[in-house]
Image 1 (cartoon, rainbow, N blue to C red):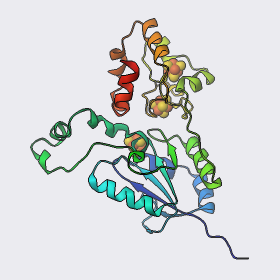
Image 2 (cartoon, helix red, strand yellow):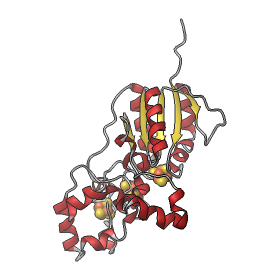
Image 3 (cartoon, rainbow, N blue to C red):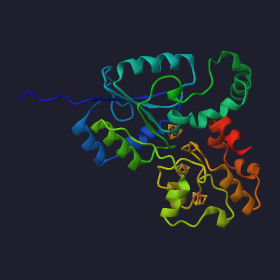
Length: 254
Ligand code: SF4
Ligand code: SF4
Ligand code: SF4
């Protein structure tokens, strides 16, 4: 009987820090199990070969230049399945910070008198340019969720991205709320799926997975009132991702 060929998997990075690919490389034993099921043909962080023939494309990073737009469209044409890997790809992540200023202002802040030499557009998540089949949020991605998504992908099943807040997971993990410790936390309105990773480890939620679709804005306001806080008091600690949440955050909470 003819042996069935394995699907070919490739990684591509756009504007990002490559930390999400590093999470993938750190899968360890699971990565060895994965290569039993797929042929990894392009993964710059762990191999030097790169073959331009693939079925599954993992996309890391935001789309931030005209050239990125052309490149992601070409990848989409080739790939049977396309996965947005990490917050930069899923919600524009930290790159979204630049979207709150005009492009000219953002370029001047970063490049000074060389700003005119820089060709850039607003930072976009991948789904704003091409169709995305699977999304893995997080900065960086959370390994157990990566494994869940890969299993769904290989079985041809959809992966349902959680649409409830990190607080749900945090309560199930029996953490003491950071607000009880006089710290603000974005878990109330941030999409779950990381098993409240940061709070479990003594930190607070910075909102890296983006807003849930219907954030409980009134409940969030009640919490702020209870602790004598204003929205501005909270947001000033969370500029890293809430800029990429942008207008939606403003609409819900202002
Ligand atoms: S989501 Fe975070 S860890 Fe992943 S590539 Fe972007 S900046 Fe790096
Ligand atoms: S606000 Fe933060 S610390 Fe408090 S329950 Fe929600 S996720 Fe946990
Ligand atoms: S707790 Fe918040 S900041 Fe930490 S990984 Fe989860 S969503 Fe991201």
